[in-house]
Length: 276
Image (cartoon, rainbow, N blue to C red; front, side, top):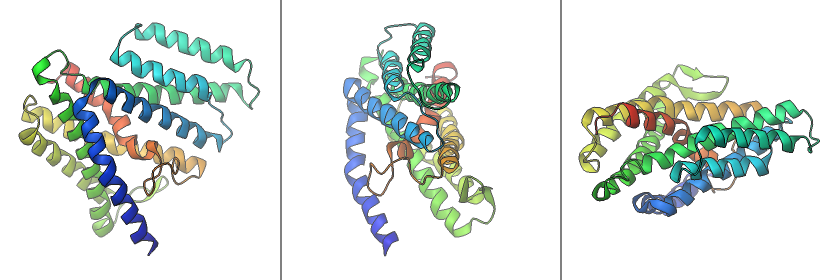
């Protein structure tokens, strides 16, 4: 009964959240930027709270502001990244002088991991959405690309879960995710590619079939890796969810870990290798 209730909650939340995310993705610009701010900052705070269970204390104020600055800089480049990086690191080191929370080295390291894993990776989501911004008449393609990537991630997760539950016999990372199997992960990989192929013919006019397949491969591999990385962090801290912010779904970090982890690789591929 509890499983059915939890599933019902997940479905209801998804029915409200998915149309909202689709609208933000299509509109783009500042509304989408604010959405990524929310993903990045909340995920950083959830990450920080997980680490506190292991007596690591990231600087949440400087960390949160740093995540905001990095994401904003990806939208409006107000400072070259290396200079922004130097300022953020110097600020973090100086502020740690005034904190008295266990190991300063551990706190600084935890802060930096959170800032650049979540902040820098999240900034790539904005870069993907704005990839077609120079072409006014094709601006909506960036929104359709984000929607397609999210659909591929969600379908990948669903395929991995249902096929893994039915046919999974070989555990992939039993120490980190004891219920996930190679069979489920392979199913997720295949379905992520298929989703991007379908999206290419329905939504993505400017994306070649080859590019769609490569992006599907990136999602199928690194989207799942993002989920495993977050599971590794949570397992180490002995927590089930990053937070209880979203009923039935856990936290923001739980819901967007795959997008956060795969976004930089998708953007790098689009920028350097895709024939647009």
